[in-house]
Structure formats: structure tokens, C-alpha cells
Image 1 (cartoon, rainbow, N blue to C red):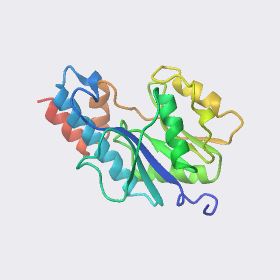
Image 2: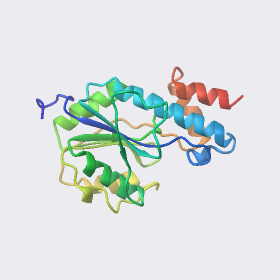
Image 3: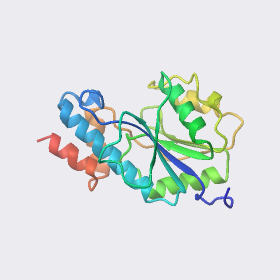
Length: 210
């Protein structure tokens, strides 16, 4: 472990799904086609991985459902997701990687290296770090000492997911980050693209809207 407040020594995890048409971002269709939705998902994943790669994290991991593709940069370990529901898969990812670790998804391409570095610093100085999402879920979760019981059984993809997850962190020193919008719907995609106009994601959204 590094000095208190130093983000180095933190593992950064991206939990992701292979961007295959018809299997990712299905709520973007319509107005986008399945192929366009997959390209938008791939762009979001690539932007997210770029942000992770630009941090000082000692270890970078992709917890993947599917197979790696050309979107995977060098310097990342790839592990397979395990479990049925998302709560089990998240719990297993933290257990497989070990702590301290910060986990994000592939749905917030507006994330920056500075945001991730801040999460790492806060985790180094506490027990947990939590990033709330605008839809009531969370876009980031960090745990110093991952315990699967902190995640298993938390209802996912609901307006109260974030509140239920925070209940599981009771008794820990939790640092809360700013709220981000994750990309679930076409409306989300347009809003996030406007927030991060120079990203691959924004370019993919604009191309799909033509």
C-alpha cells in the first residue's frame, strides 16, 4: 500500500461487455440500429479505457463478458466475468482482483483521468468511494478491502440501486464523488455526447444520428 492519499497502488477495473450488435446497448434501438448501437458502445468503451490508461494506477483490469477486440489497448489484464446477476458479477470481480480496487462500467465515456485519480486518492484515505449516477444507480465503486457481501443481493438496474448499495457500505468511511449520467437510452447518449464533444463516443453518436 502506498502513502495515504496516493492513488498509486489502486487497481482500476472496467467491467464491460463485448460490443456485439444485438447484445449491447439494446435500449438505444430505436432510433439507432443494432449496428450503430454496438459502434456507440465500442466508442464508449474505448474512451473509458483511454481514461483508465492515462492514470497512475499500477494495475488495470478489464472484467469482460465476451472476447477482447481491437478496442483493447496495451497494459490491461483481461479476466472473465463470473456469476448470474450483475450483483454477483460485481462481487466476483472484486474478489478475483483483490483490493484496494476501483470499478467503473463502460457507460460513462465522459469520465476523465482526473476523476479516476481523485477516486483513487479518496480510497487510499478511506474505506470506500462511491460515484452516484443520475438514474439512481452508481457509476463508480471503490473498496479498500473487497467483501462480496457488500454487493451480493443488491438489486441492480433500479431507481433505488444506489441507495441500496450505500446501505451495504454502512460502517465504512465512504467518500462520495460527483454525479454522472450513464448511457442507457438515446436521450442519455445525446446528453453525454454534448458533455464530451471531443470523444470517440460523441463522434459515434453524431454519425448514428445522420
